[in-house]
Amino acid sequence: MRGVAEITALVKEAAAEAGFDLAGVAPVRAFSELEHFSEWIAAGRAGEMKYMEARDEAGHLKRASMRSAAPWARSVVVCAINYNTAEAYSTEVQDPERGWISRYAWSREDYHEAVMRRLRVVEGKLLNACRQRGQDAPATAGGTPALQTRCYVDTGPIVERVYAKYAGIGWIGKNTCILNQKLGSWLFLGVILTSLELEPDLPAPDRCGSCTRCIDACPTDALIAPYQLDSNKCISYLTIEKRGVISEEMREGMGRQVFGCDICQDVCPWNRKAPATTAPEFQPREGLVNPALAWLAEMKAEEFGTKFRGSPLRRTKLSGLRRNAVIAMGNSGDQRFREPLRKLSEDEDALVAEHARWAARKLNS
Image (cartoon, rainbow, N blue to C red):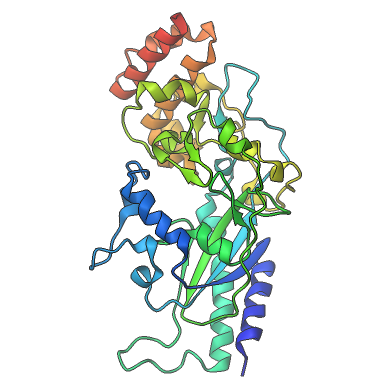
């Protein structure tokens, strides 16, 4: 018979063997941060991300309460893996003909699949340990298995960073990212919900102190206060989640970011000495570090499908990526883009054409 402490230790050992850099256990509680999530949704700060507002039959936000999303869950195993690379890069792109793709999207394999594959290994060892203990044998009177688990990688009705905090993975920084004292914030998170009551870790202490570099550096003022993000102003939201027309008032602040944004993480002191990952899946694909804007703006569907197969960039779709690229061209100040933008102003994609006309006017102003 294996005890809870032994199974908890086994899970963490399995996470390390699967390639995770960090692993911890959080209890299922009504954490105060989840109340703040409900307030954030009510204030409209999720923008058009309606999936964030998923509710149960009683009308409760699923992400605001584990009791709504998975009433059987008693513990959350949180695993984290570093995706920082040793590649020389900077969001302050010197070449005006080039843009910026968030480093999480450089990877050779979609992080959802890479992290989930490792997470399944951990889940399998947890289940096997419980079978040996005989804990999964009988079903309850209602027919529910005595042991239940569920894995998520950025797809489930759960606010991962809250459980990451209470699992001791890191604290929630003023930029709303999880920060670890040794690894910084370049972390992918995966969670395993389980009906087992495992030994919980202590929550990570907040080490942001009086620093406000992330808030001060945000070019669109998306960080409206410490620990508070308005997605409607966030460059990552605008370039990835936002569909259709981006308001003119937000375009200039986007700079030459074409997919995601790392600015608030780049300026964070805790990322100065962040180590590089050893995971081969997270090494950058060719051409994604400071990509050529003209290449992206003029990309055709066939090349988009081939180049970004299995890549997070597919989420923005070809039209959205081209829209972002022409905005970046307008913000570049590079007069060499005048002729390409003139042609793009007549593009068959009305969304691209509208943003190209704005970009052309900006270059001419």
